[in-house]
Length: 344
Image (cartoon, rainbow, N blue to C red; front, top):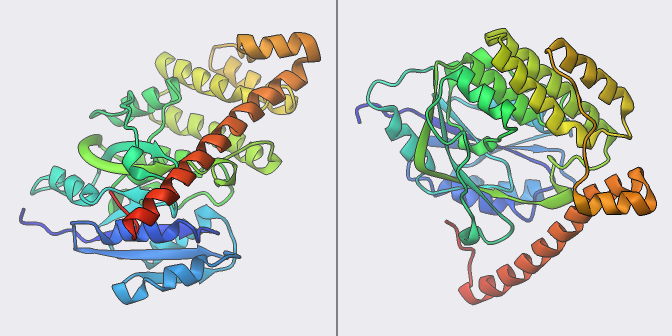
């Protein structure tokens, strides 16, 4: 390759003392060496800032600000960056060692600055070597409109760190929306895709997404603030895709997207449910009452709809917590035997 683009790896962090060291090690381990690493600590109340600063002798730049939320921390990190390409990385996730280099190589010798690169990603709890990579409908080359139709129509997801974004695309998309505390990444990358000319999927470039459970910033639960944020993001996503193409297939994809999120709001937030119904009617469809699976329908018959829906939200979290606790136990055993952290 004749080009050597400079890459900025940007890491927002809040109360991530237990995992940010692993994220920084994965950033430092990148085989693409023409890079910088910037951490913005968003007013953490634990040792996150101290841990991050321990990496400064290795060239990591650390910025501290009062707590303003993940979107504001990302905007601050971007303001300090100087890369031709931006690699976003959350403080609890990991990059495969060749992730950035593989995507840069996929650009070729004459890259288009409006080409957007995605990658493989998988989930893990504490042991990255146990990560499972399950392809989705977004794991292929797509036009921007086809990518957005698939994403919304099937409620698919591309994890934040999968993307390698040119500075030109970042500038065209605009800053992260600081009003959003939930799905800020979904809304932001909807705008990035909208500004791109193509979405290129790069196999073998890998991201390891840590499932952090209820402590995760992305976990909504019963938080009114996050529910409001999610509903705002849904409306913005619909508006964004319709600005590119306002067709029957887009309307159908938007309707499915809205419907898929209604279990979070129904029946506690009937105000949002009614607004969503009006939006679906505007799109030429109809919003359906969210249905319970058979096991929760049984609870509904015995104890009522509210308790059944509460169980539908809480029981998977309890199972998730148990699996995470067991995986952490196994992780600690292997760490003691290895004597040092193991990265992928």
